[in-house]
Image (cartoon, rainbow, N blue to C red; front, top):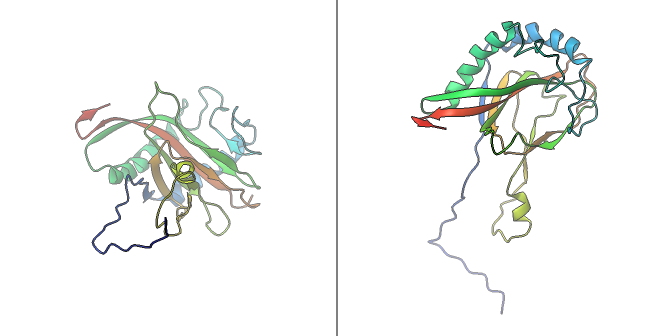
Length: 221
């Protein structure tokens, strides 16, 4: 069969099933940063790397805080009440219908000296639906820190199929992040953090959380 190039003037290329992430900014981030950063740096020194995480020396509160002393879900709800108000405004801008959510988990990650985090997703189990994950970039300098690196969930399938007119398709996406930004993305979307440079004087600190959508537009989960 000969190689014949055909041109169809009346044809249309339609991208299917796009994936969206949501991008906003936390009000008065500098005030929250001044309140939280020193405490996070101090508390994180003794936290272990969670079991199953493939990273070098990332300091995270994901599973190592003492019960009752958690910075966000502990007995002292000072920080929780402050963040709840700020995050609610960001979430309100993302959802286009009435909604009700539940925060399943919330934790911080602290990068100061070459830490990285492996590619992962935030899915938990078939019996505990995590719909979205959020990241608040509490302390972040885009000149020295790395944004999250999102991976196309269809990339593995694309490698074994023919996709015409790929238009320099890239399997990874790096969002343009500024300090104080707040993003939300589907929890199945795999992502990672590439090694950060030495920045003890300006740590990369993020607050992450997983949420369940209990009601959206009158529909109950």
